[in-house]
Image (cartoon, rainbow over all chains, first blue to last red; front, side, top):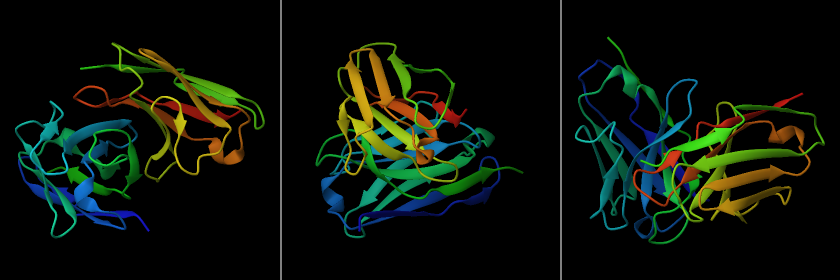
Length: 121
Length: 107
């Protein structure tokens, strides 16, 4: 079964850091681009960051550029999101998502269950 | 940044009726447009990609159309499980962007 399982969320103070992980299983992880998408409480979806199959290309929303870093570990089949200088507006459920087609950036066909990040003092 | 605008924000429909949801892009996204369904407490589910191709396992009552800047998701006969929030998303340009969503509720 194709599955994504996020972890690492929690409560953090403004200015703090957190690292999210997304463990992938059931598919050839190294062959697919991956993304992080977040959803603030009661709000819509916001794409956060994407990474290519090799990890050599990364993309970020302006709202997180310079503060968040996406990475992947092929040996562990795991996607990461390092989040620094966290702000209250970063409070959201964070989903990892798998791209539909091998090697391409496109629609997201598989989503994790999400992990909640709360930034508050 | 490409802005995706969905309308209406809320659509009240009786079970068995059809529904038409719209999504407009601020500039052309070609056919690089996806639709997702999200129910409360759940992750989004891919319904349509490439503007008109149904994802695996998606019932035929869901159909997508359009290209360029104007897109439509049509649900031909709403079932109880179809009442949810629907989002469009463009993947033609960085940053990737989602519409604000259309909530389909029971009339």
